[in-house]
Image (cartoon, rainbow, N blue to C red; front, side):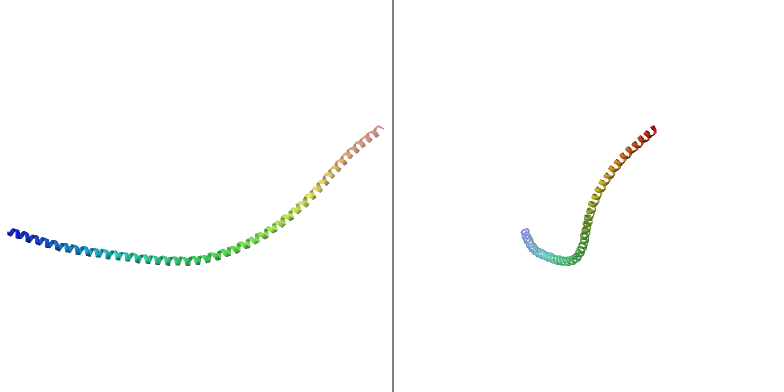
Length: 157
């Protein structure tokens, strides 16, 4: 009987220990779950804070970049206006030069026409002089021949 009593006592003790460990396990599991939830909540809050800070920094960077771009646009616009003025002045000079060159071209064309006309007239004169020279040369030969014939006839007489 003592063995049985000891066994019952031992069983009751083991059951009590088991119940104690079961309660301890449930408490630890509940604490772990609460801590896990709390940790995840803190993690999500930290992530949200980082995202908010990142959005704020992005907005600040965008605003700064926009201001810088506006300043640069002003500089670029001034440069473009200056370049446009220079190009317009250059274009006006080029147009004036083109007009001058066209006037020179017309003048040269007129001069060339006059020179061609003069050249044709001179060519006709040269041709006339050449014909006259040729005619005079023929007459000269004929006269020389006549003179020779007369000299010969004078000798014979």
